[in-house]
Length: 280
Image (cartoon, rainbow, N blue to C red; front, side, top):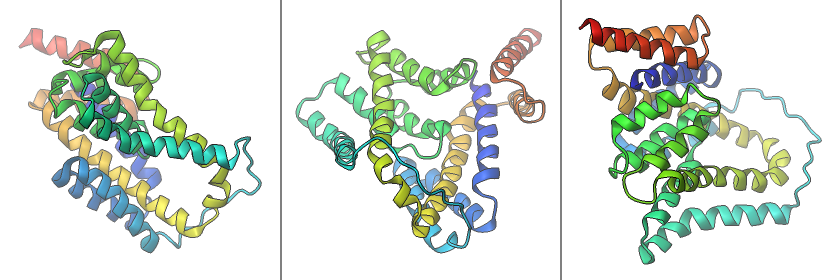
């Protein structure tokens, strides 16, 4: 199942690169982000996105983007500011609370909340963030992490499934159903808070050319972040033999060339892996 993750993440990198890095400046930002993430871990991921946004201010200002006027939302600015305040209080306050009241339940909530808060650019980008939060501390093994991510592609809503799965299989208690519920709520809560917090200001913010340029640079950096995750931990832990490479490449081609549904790819790759083991 780890090889399924290779094929799926490679497809995601290809699709995001085609839409978010269509020119040389943004491709350069993505390439620089890859090197930063590989050398800097979680800090490198955040730094890459921030520097991508800064680079976008310089390199991406000439790209024309259509702005649609007249968007309105039924959320007041005061309510939006309140949601943003709660978002920031949880992001920076949870680590402080944990330093005083250190429980595994709070640590689990904090880990998934931070992953949900810092993800930028799409569901697959959460992969390196979650890996840093649950694999490196030893809560979940790397094999279980990638196998779960591969299997999650066979069902609707992979991010829902994967976050709940990680909460359920984490080593320290709470785990099981309780851990799954904590992880599920924590990873989606920051997204809801940010959505409600930014909607009242989005129409005005999106009209600024500098904001558009920064977003284009940050999106290009996200491609690099996911590309780095494709290399490590996905590729380095899954592709160990020539047979592994052949299976991963086959899965990628099924997704990209034949447009096969992910669940079909999961079944075919699992059957192929079993057949290879029997033959060997």
